[in-house]
Structures are given as C-alpha cells and as structure tokens.
Length: 404
Image 1 (cartoon, rainbow, N blue to C red):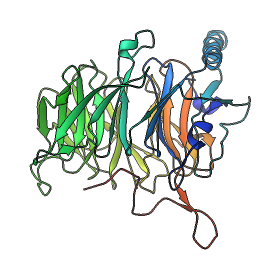
Image 2 (spheres, helix red, strand yellow; image 1 turned 120 degrees about the horizontal axis):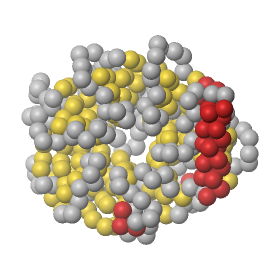
Image 3 (spheres, rainbow, N blue to C red; image 1 turned 90 degrees about the vertical axis):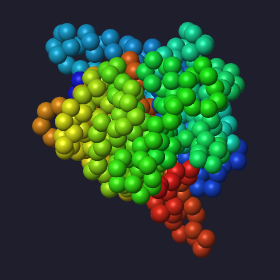
C-alpha cells in the first residue's frame, strides 16, 4: 500500500456486476454483503443476498499492473522519497442494479465468477483456509455457515462439499453457527454460537470436539452473553482470539482456556467485526447502529485507545480492513464513502478514497499488491404508491442476522 493514502490516486480496474444481476433477484436486490481476498491474493470471495458464495480470479493484467506500480513506487522512494499510485479492484453492485465506478480512469473489466456455491439459506459468515495457495489444490478451500445449516467446508476449485461440521444445542438439534474462523495453523475451526464457542477438528467432520460456554444463561451477569457474531485470532501466535457479540460485548480468550481473559464494552450496537493489528498488540472492533470503530490495546483493556468515525446507522454489516504494515485503517460506510485513517500519530480527519451512491458494505486489501476490493450495495424496496425507493434501515435488520 502507498505510504500516504491521502496522496494516492485510486483507479478502478475491474468490477463484477453481471454475476449478481443475472437470474432471479431477491426482494430488495441482490446486494453483495462482503468481499475478501484469499490469503495468497489470487482470488476474491463474495457473499450476496441470493444465498450464494462466488469466487473471482484476479485478472493477470490487473496483477501485472499492480506489481509494476509497486516496483515504480519503490524506485521513486529510493530516488526522491515520493510514493506511487494505487490500483483498485472493485466488486460492486447496488440496490438499483447499476455499476458504480471506482474513482475514474481506465475502463473497467467485467469480472466473471470462476465458481459459484449455493448455500440455499442466508450466509452468516465465511472464511478462507489460512494456508491457501493456488499452487496447491488441497489447500484451496473455504468455510461457510448459513441459517439452519451446519458449517460447510467447500473445495474452492471444484465447488464440491468436502466436509460438514455440526453443532447441536441442548435439545440435540442442529444449531447454526453465526461466525466461523480457522485458527492460524488451519488445524481447527472455531465457530460462534449463542453464548458458546465450539471447536472442530478439520480432519474429523461431524460433532465439535469441544464446547466452550461464554455465559451460563441468557440473563447471567457473568461472562459474554448473546450471539457470537464474529471471531478473529491474533496473528502473533499467542493463541489469543476475540469474539464479538450482538449483545454489544467483546470477549478476549486464549485457546488453552475456556474462560475469558477480558470482557470489553463500549459499543452501542451489536458487534459485527473484530480484527487484530498485524503485530497483535491492538484490537479494532466495529458494530451495527454504531458509527465508531474502537481500538483497544490488548495489554491494557481498561479503556479504548482511539475511536474512528464512520456512518453505520442501520443493521447492515459495514466492514473494514487494515494495511499489512498496520499503519492505516480502511473502512466502508453507510453514506457510500471508503475512508482511510492513519493509526499512528495524533488523531486526524479521514481521507475519502472513493465515493459511491450506495453503502460500502465491505473493504478488503490485497495481501501483497496495492489493490483494494470493495463491495457496494444495500437493499432497497419500491414504495407501493410510487415515490422514491425506500432503503433498508429499520428494525428488521440484515437478512440472516439477529440479536439476543
């Protein structure tokens, strides 16, 4: 990424529109819920309102141009200290079915999905295998969890189902996970449920090998209550992981103990994303109906160390991401802007990198190239008696998500 995002120029390189607008569309539009780069940066993964996951390969021309941009920026820094430009790959679709450009410049190339996986129900969460490499087909796999279904492990090359991991509630009924994540080694799957984290062995499909309750009852004053909506592991190898809840709390846990080591508050809405900085020293969290991303020092969690403002007044998930050196925060927003905040130094106003007509629901930075992927869109419904289209923003919430 450029050393100074405020000086960079984003140019839209490619976009995916036809893949989401073709066929029967759900009520309110086939909105893209989020986008994530694969760990090796070879492809993109999206989830959308039509209960499907799509995998898009990064065009070789875009990758070549981005690599050339990186080389030019390095040469410029060696010469006079100035940075280079930045490229942007966008996966965008909005409620009106119109393609939105990413800052002007070259004409956009239409991305075609290399793979489509139909879950059949609303997708709650999804995750790449952390050691995924396009050169090793065995590692090309991804997780997904959806309403009323077990956790599924999919082959990212053929689209076939490799394995299922089933959580059961106290009535021995199938219980759908609200969030999923691989632990860094890829050996175990951690899944978030209501007041519990269940651990699955990747090599042993079926029941969980361990259940870790986070609270005794729904009304318990001790522990972490609510649906565990997001999970993230620290990249420092310490075994520390964070769990966000729709009840508004964030729990810090270690993989060799069941009880939390810290319980954080501060959000006014349900937590929808948690992410550690690359050095593992700080945790950032975002929530629905809360216009702040809160930064915590995991070594001293008495109070937040910083807050970053964005527009998030509805129940729609609004994603964010961090630069690979941990120097900048990139976030979407309900007002259609992609914002960049410096994480070091004194507090400053954000830089608006991109602006769209609809909400930016997801932001993902390429792991090695200066490429930014965004997902754009929100559900809109025509009024029965004419007039402007009504945007989703009431108490109904985002499809497939609920709170306690």
